[in-house]
Image 1 (cartoon, rainbow, N blue to C red):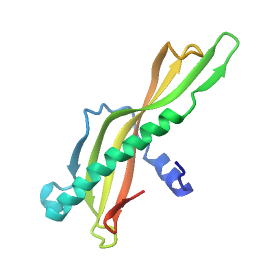
Image 2 (image 1 turned 90 degrees about the vertical axis):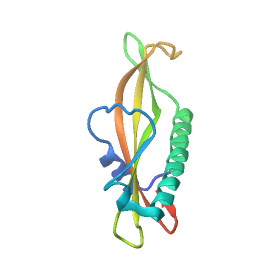
Image 3 (image 1 turned 45 degrees about the vertical axis):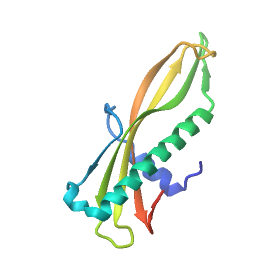
Length: 143
């Protein structure tokens, strides 16, 4: 999965704060349902589907990543990334006809450290909240 330099910078800026417990795939709108309307309901539904597919891609990419091994004088520490299955979505109107909505997807990236190369004694060493923003343009979600 290739990303442009701007996307990488933006994603870096979107990694925020301390770990936030997420309780499952939920959704919200910036100003409540009245701000979105019936057309927004369809857009909201399409963003929920898009988000599920996006998280599948993120999880597949994590599975394809090779763990990183770091050797020291006393042992080898193996680290790898994983993502939670829980995520939240939010839909916001922009007021611009060319991209009338933005969708906000929040999930957590987990970093695991393993005490041996077999990776059978692992603990989560950190959890990083991730926020990604997508725009709705020409009837589809753009990333």
